[in-house]
Amino acid sequence: MSLADFSTSLFLLVVLVSDHDPIYMRIVSLLLIVSLPLSAEKFPWPHWLGPDHDGALDDFFLPVPAKGKDYAMEWSVKAGSGWASPVCDNGLLVLHERVGEEEFVRGLDPDSGREKWRFSYRSGYRDGFGMEDGPRSTPAISADTVVSHGPQGLVHALSTKDGALKWKVDLGNKFSSPKGFFGRCSSPLIVDGKVVFDVGGPKAGMVALDLKTGETVWSSTSYGNDYSSAVPFGDPSGRLVLSFMREGFLALNAKTGKEVFFERFRSPINASVNAASPMVAGNRVLLSSCYEVGAGIWEYKRSAAGKGTFRTLWKRKDILDCHYSTPVHDGEFVYGFHGRQERGPVLRCISLKAGKVVWEAPPMGAGNLIRAGKKLVILTERGELVLAEASPKSFRSLHRQQILGTDARAHFALAEGRLFARDLRRLVCLNLEKFE
Image (cartoon, rainbow, N blue to C red; front, side, top):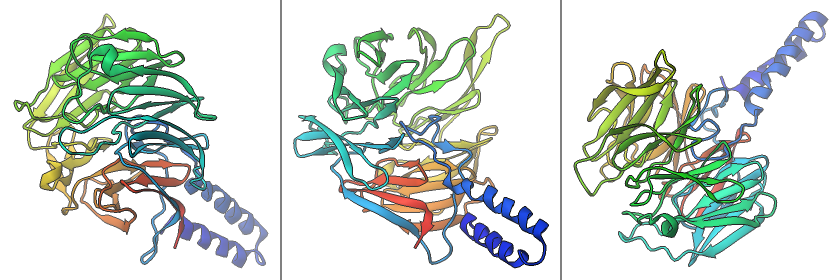
């Protein structure tokens, strides 16, 4: 039974008992009041992989439409090209896109899709392999600032109020960051008043800019750039930044940029990319890639002297080889797409502890996913929304709904009781509390 059905049943029960027993009426009324906010909780999705940088909303209760019903399409607006995910926080929805020779960062009203402001600049990016020319990196919202990163390496910090430019930095020129195979793709990571990027190249691997000014705070030793975005990692002695560089697993002190840990985890094939972000599960970190890399698990531990480091638990090929989609976890189990995008990947559940495949879902092609409580929310490249149980027992589909076209490679967002998703032509908003 969905939350909406449960609430309706409680309301009818209130009506039935109201003329017979006032005490029962008060008890059932209280249950009804307590139940209603569960689906209406308003979570933000302010940056890549959501509020906790892990693609999950632990406390989000997602009602499932009854058979024959769909989530209501609240609005749909035209969108430009690109694979940047929408983000949403504090009543502002932000989308980075390309139209013609211009890149746009637009601030929208999440309730209606109405444009509040837009910032534009000439792009000039051309993909050398004939792939998408639009942005790949997802913007980040922090208080009164939006930060975007274009495929040519241009970073812009804008006002959330009106889209006015605060500062800009050309990472490509400043750090000699190479274009790579498909342009720059590092989504901004805002942590402790800094914006962190994977730039790669001869001058630096990772760099941090001051969120207020754009000035360089620190830069790490040189590593090759790739397509994975960095995530934060909590540590009592100082927060860390984790990144899947071209050469492997890198951990830095977020305050100083000092290297804490590095371990090679690299494809033997030059024509390869690491695109999935590190997945943090407590004190463990999972990295996964295709191109004969596979998956690896590292555990973070602190010594008696208080110094922390990572140690490898296992590395295995053909367990979970993520091409571009970052997996999600629920306790000891991980859910993610295994295999190359162009060869038809499959959704798998694996055991973190055992390093074994638990189940494999029927083919649905490539896609991205979010965990909402005990449910998996999946958007395939074909534009189909799939809800399934986040359970190690088996794959069980709960709902399927076509919401976009067949070019929906961008990740999506769950925010303010809605789902925001885009393809190369439009941005849509589904109301997760209304069915039609």
